[in-house]
Image 1: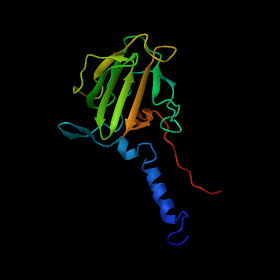
Image 2: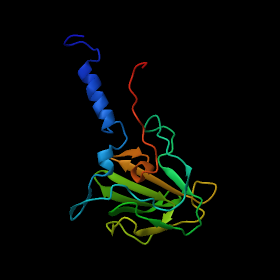
Image 3: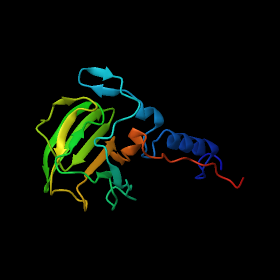
Image 4: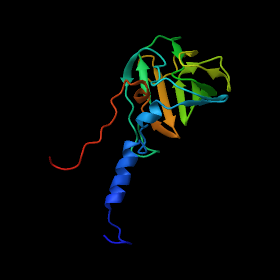
Length: 184
């Protein structure tokens, strides 16, 4: 269509394709996974991949809700675990919350570059503002306060406020792949 038309132009399709490839559709870009993690003292290079906060199987996968207010699973459940299992920081960061939400102890770590991890049910002695490095113990799995049948850790990650699959950051999830349009 000409100027002022409402059709999709080649430029719009190209821009949309680039946005999706860069992860602006809610998934982190490959470069974002290996990007630097900011710290209060300046930027320090991060490892290419994050670490799992606990060694366990995936009991329930990430399920993006169709709308921000819709039903979904905004993280992954890792387990089964024993009560008191050690939980570790998946990447460098700073404690941004440690307390109870509704009936569960929750711990959140701000990692920089828009990344925020949340863990539940996790008891900790750390306080808001404490710095942690990847692999540092940050707490222990609380008993009797989870939402799984067997004790588990719920791990959620937000990037700029949008929930993403945490396993994409560890390399343990298959990223979405865009396929070309057309028949051949």
